[in-house]
Image 1 (spheres, rainbow, N blue to C red):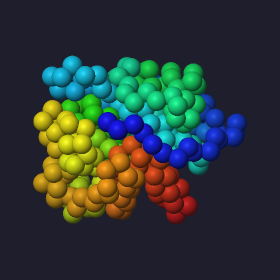
Image 2 (cartoon, helix red, strand yellow):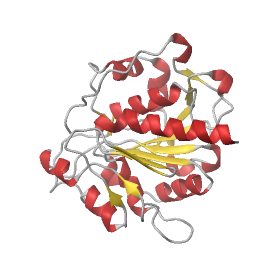
Image 3 (cartoon, rainbow, N blue to C red):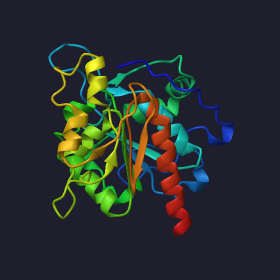
Length: 267
């Protein structure tokens, strides 16, 4: 995957440094910027547990910047975050670029490291405890997100309860098999963005991945929107927020933050 190239986000002041809030009843670690606001329902960040690119032997996992940049955006509004992965425990990490200031700040923070080391198994979560769900990318996601029984169940429950669904880069692979209670695909008729077929060809993995994400979303009825390779592209359609590539990660987080804060204002 092309290295993450994003403008550096401003360093947050000490008041918004990551800290543990009261964990959900499930025991999943929760990070929040303001513990006084910990009564808010967290957003569930879901990470891939898949560690290799097909049969190539090349390591993969979740892409670090596609976790840290959205997390920084949510924390600016004091929105707590909890972590899960397909298998639970410590998921494999990719894109460990510590020259990225946001990556370095979180990776060197003991609270964040503990949270991503002890993720809950997605199949064990109670969807009613979360205000939204976010699927981080990394090539591993295209293998285990679509094949997980928990992904459609948890996503459908959160979305139909009025929650926000977000995903970036290969994270939208989680959405290809999510159906609503009426049997229709969640993405059918909706504007989306995801890692494009052209970008997959650019990294020479089009014959390695199990399917091309952009094409598959279109087959499910989605209206895919693309920007030039490695250019930020974020699409918001109702309570569905999707982004094309690592460059879109912060924008997805900001869009989810706006929807969540807006929903609170209307309550």
